[in-house]
Image 1 (tube, helix red, strand yellow):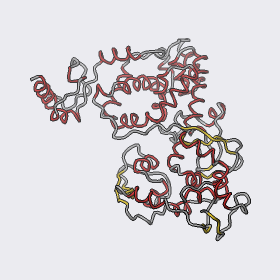
Image 2 (tube, helix red, strand yellow):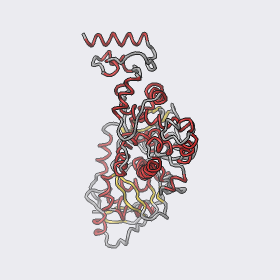
Image 3 (cartoon, rainbow, N blue to C red):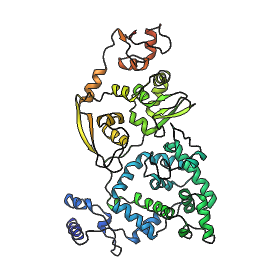
Image 4 (cartoon, rainbow, N blue to C red):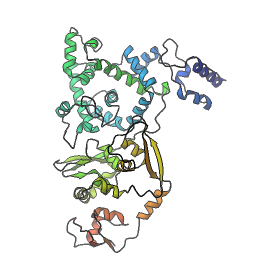
Length: 461
């Protein structure tokens, strides 16, 4: 009987109030906060947007408040309504991306003794897109402009831009925010200064007659900054109360990738490194978005290359051979395509993907388990840019094909292997069962170093 009452209530709301988002006078109802168990009623709620009640927002903000004040204000309410109503799909994208980046933020904030809620600031800054660039040439998750990035130790040149490094930029943002808070003694003013610079905030304070709070100097700040702090407060509310406002969870989330680093003092091509280690190229790109051309340049010394943590032991054990291959192989997109040939689609399933708002190539590649390079080749793309509603052809592994392919690779070791162009001791050892680089060297004592010659016969069994 109770479920029937809820069903009738929602039907009446749907008929009488087609736009349910902005009404202010209606009192909160049980239907606003509790999901319904009945399947038919649940379907009605798929497009249902509960009202944003002033009293409820005030109460919830007060409960969320920890180290940073989260006061209610009409401007805050405006942004809450936008994220929950007009930009609901954008909010779902935030929910999708936060799983990957929030663990990084939380660890850095705890290390620097900063409030945990600052992690939501990156949503305001970059929508959690590590390679995003602003009109002011600010880059990365924390949107550092070039000068401030260099001031906080973020290296930038034609090959590397550490403003896009999730780990380094987060640490720099923590140090900068700590400095701003020490300068102003107030988190709202520190956040405003992060957006427009400490000079503009100090000027606004003087013009206001030396007022000491954000809301007192509000009209003396740049227009963008007036919205910046309210947006931060609104995002704190929205990301903690999506369920109560029936924001559907994302279909898929970007998983956090536990990672570690190895130090390299040589040229490393990520494509070649991917080929030698078996780590998907897209994963290496996701962990190293600051490598603008997917290489570590030759002039870097002891540069930290980020890799999946679970792969470190294997890489360290075969470090010499892997890095030698990554350095010596002149791997270009053509040769990498030859390694994973786009023309060979036997046993693969063709899929047409329509690009949605907020998607980018590496995310789409990860979703289907393919490489970014293959995606570009299949669709004759000359850059990484894709557009909303663009149709992409994708050839993904068909069910059961993976097992058969894997089994074909495990073959009995023949007596000899004829060296092919691009062969290294490491990748040869991976082709044959129970064969390691050390065993290869024992079987072939005449080998000197890592040098192999095309056509050379080496013993593998």
